[in-house]
Amino acid sequence: MHEHELKQFLLRGWMTHDAMWLKNAIEMVGIERANRLNRAAIRDMTPIEVQRVLAALGMGGVSSFAELKTFLTGAMGLLAGDYFHYRWWWDPADLLRVRVDECFAFKGLTRMGAIAGYQCGLLDRVYRWFDALGLDYAVSPAVEHCTMHHEGRCVREIQFTFSKDESVRSTCKP
Image (cartoon, rainbow, N blue to C red; front, side, top):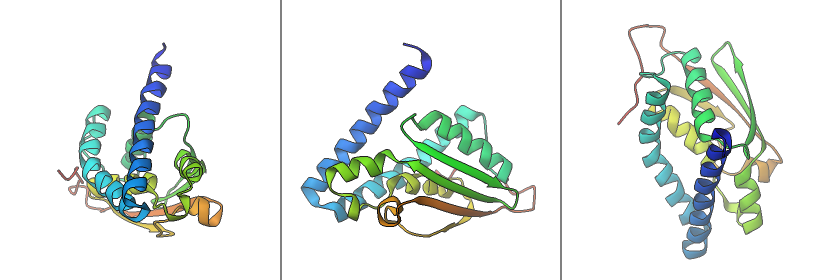
């Protein structure tokens, strides 16, 4: 098995576990409580994950839009599988535009019949990365539901504000 195939194999195993965990949580406690549990786990996991990604990329933190691009490109290269299809555009005004073309969570939760009540854990995970990095940002639209289901598309704009003071450097919050 080649390195890329091994990575995809491991990521699919992790995502299958994640999907089965959420499926069972929905069946046992309902979609509302499952969403809260899922998002709490994401919130608790992401500072650890960000520290690991920063170390893997040889970065000490993120203090500019260029460093954020390096971090996100590296993180998605490490953590996103071939089954997740998205595009992003990096505007020089520190604005990131993201469009998800094909979402495995949307597909899986639709098959489960739970998509109507699902709160997006995928984008929430990325937002928690920003929080763990100590970044100042605003998301539009600022919604928690699955916009692929409710609006037929998944698009976000994320506006960042970076300090112009070079001595200020964000680091991962423990």
